[in-house]
Picture 1: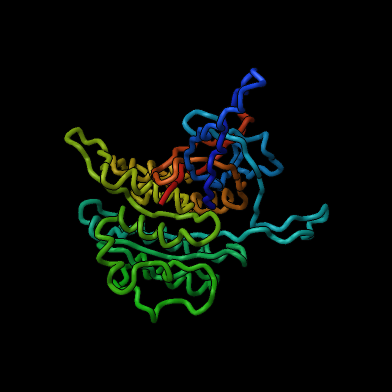
Picture 2 (picture 1 turned 135 degrees about the vertical axis):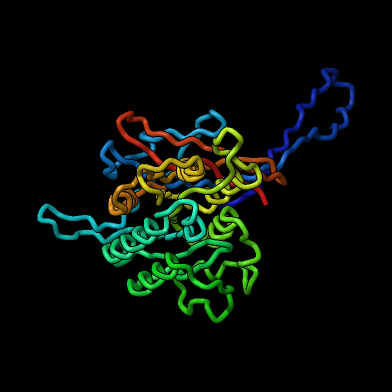
Length: 360
């Protein structure tokens, strides 16, 4: 987002001239000025538009979207569609290259400690990892995948890569529990491709700064903020957070909304996959639903076969629209601006992040 300062124009009061010709012209009065400085922010929102069957819709323009800030409509300055698939002619031959690669972060919430309380959850998590290894083999050649996990601290097993073998090896490590390791300079990638490790805290700081899964998600999102494009975080978990005395999920003001805001500001959409048995209910799944809904992703619950959500994620992320508009905020202030994105066609569905940070 680009910031620019607009200074309001200075207005001069009109000076009345004396009607009497013998009198000297009055002394000009000082200009009356007023001014206020504001920040002009170019807001970029990615939006995935699908039909009722989950098929990505192409060919939409500015008039097909409705974007509001605080209930007030904004004027879009540009709408562009990006796809990870090449366009084909009538015979199925590529005529245009893919306009964007996809960026996936596979995030495994370690279930080993929970397995004593919920027998079978670890086996389900391992099955999800096996399906994920099959899934990455079928991604496009331009797609990037990073792999991370959390038990007591964040571990990035694999930075963004197109190497399928490296992806599979990292998924296996994440699912079975890798040994904690710091983000030391020797681990940094040598190439100039997208990277999480380059922007993570260095040394053991990444371990020390992520004692909760919420903080792990925040640190991971901030590390991805400089990576251009929509980041799709596939979160395998049974849920987390607190439960009140009535057995209901209790949002934690210290973590829930701050985590959502940082994910949104970093352009990270959460696709949460519940690894509990499909016949098991847990109020902690509400944490997964919250993250997915408010970041423009999707929540998959009661999963019988993990192939299904992974296939739907791959299908839904093949293309997205980038909406742009200009917004103003008082200079020197910072905060979080809620945004609502909708489409004019009631038969279509849209997923988009629900806000952005402004100011310093």
